[in-house]
Length: 230
Image (cartoon, rainbow, N blue to C red):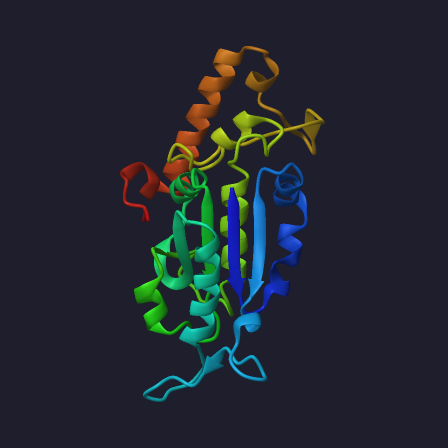
């Protein structure tokens, strides 16, 4: 998989892309991730990328021309399965969307900034708009980092145990069951006996029951099918 990210402040992404699971995927050659500085495509001597909004109002807007230059260059080099704009008014990102995107070959992520991007870029290039929640961030870089992490960890060979991703929270519209490790007793709290039994059928049944109970208590919307899906 190849992921290209267009950003006005690419340094924000350095830590996420160079550590932990994402870094491991890159080292193994399972994920190729490139960050493109929008200022490299800016206008004039000072590489301008933003301007005041027509009609007035507070804030600045990322200009169409620099973004178009960058997207056109990248699209001339490869085909993208999705060109995604990270924006608070996009469809809410969830595990189902992560699963779907993990099957793609090439993804292009565009990070918004300031008051957003010129609408004409959305009209001309964007195939999908994604939000990571009902709140506003300074820019789309953190949202892009979330999507990259959620998608890359699903690629075959990235995790040490392939089953790990399949049993994550939300994979079956259920929250994950509680987990325990050593010691067996901690501050008078003990590990449930079933997990020490060695009976894999009982353990699987217990975990499923716990998942249902947790989901019913904390996220009943998942069981009723009313949670938001892209």
